[in-house]
Length: 217
Image (cartoon, rainbow, N blue to C red; front, side, top):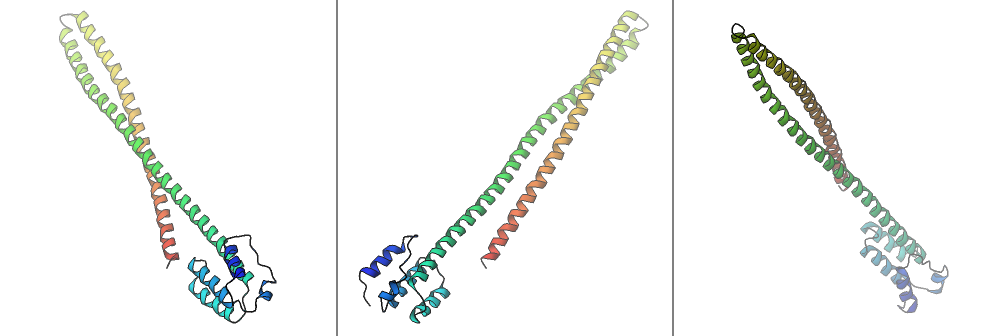
């Protein structure tokens, strides 16, 4: 039961995925159990097999029911399995990252909409202030027109014309005020829709995280 060239060659071939031992190899070696045990230990040490399979393979090796080719197949299949697992983890990580990006995108949209709402609300507030001023000017023009009717019709007419101009400006600003109020309502509605989508994403992400935790139990 030597550890000569054949055994060393096999360990060198262990790292080669394309390696396939010669089917006549076992026939040339009368007792290669310890060499198989060494390979089984290496598979276990590298995490390619679990503890139960480690003991199962050892029993098979001692019973002469395990070939080097089977060990190399186990090594190869575990390599592919780890690659697939790594790929699956990458896919899950990408999906999680995409969800995070979507959530962040929604948060940015909400911030942008809130800023727009502040601007619209600021303009609406200025319009309301100006409307109050115009209403006061209109009232003053009416009073002046009434007071000047008896003394000077021409002066009274000027106040009346001024009152009409003020009323026209008031109507324009009231129209703009309604348009801005409509914009604010649309912004609020959009924010609620985005917030709903964001909450849905967060809920789905949480469910996936819980499912992954349960898998590890």
